[in-house]
Image (cartoon, rainbow, N blue to C red; front, side, top):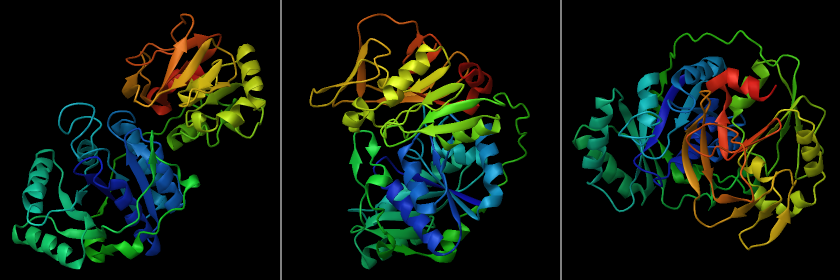
Length: 420
């Protein structure tokens, strides 16, 4: 598999739009592209998968870790020709510092792959030179080469030529492709992009111009190295019920694969559709958008079956939106109160501002991420569900619930204990 990392100058430069446009192009060229995403994002990978028809996996040096990132690439290497990794934020933005753990450039350096830099070219011509020069020089300090540029929001053929000639005059990475300013956009809401099931996937090809050979040359053969596969099937013979629908859609493909690799059988069900929890040994309630489906959820027979499952003492892991299902009510942004499963004495209250954002790590070593707009209003103190640097959540019987989304392979022993 040949790999390149698509980095951006900053958040909002158009990385995801460019990513989808390039994936469409590679697919139209019958090159079987595979998409990946740097960091803990759920929504961008859903769009990637909608274009390619294959799951998009998260990779990074913070939450997933470089060893697991390499293992994922090794496992998928024979299934595709070209892999494109969409970066996170700006190229040098990570957990802290400049180009440190979690950043796009750190992953590129540790995987020894080149970067393609997305530049928002709106309103610039010659000024692209010092901008790209600075990014190239700093990337080289981190051991990464910028193989080329994709210019976004370009004013037309003449503007594109000015950009290309300016970069060529100063010996800088070339323009590999450009996207016209009239290219279609992607709709957003409070947690980022809408999910692709709710909108038609735009066709970017009429607005995209590509230097075919130069673009393909930016992809280099990825040799991530030998990574030992796990030999212990810790969940052999266990059935795990998993909520999956429009309200519970924040599921890392790597987590699903990890549970299957550990021998578990997964039984899917939809709370929005009113399906009861299937017969299972454990239950996983992922996050998503329960606030957008409050009417269906408040009337769903799934909630009673979730409560019964928890009260039975079987192991349950609830993440963010999955935790919101377990309170007495969900208060929407208009102040309407919708009854939930009534397992725990709290209300989940939507607000217009961000409540929390950041990487999280439990004392067990389990790594994850917290990102939400709701707050939990409790009428009593709870036993902490986790010992971590973010929301410590709630422990009740054999339930662990919090606002955190966990990456299971980061602490395999812990997830086994949580689900057994």
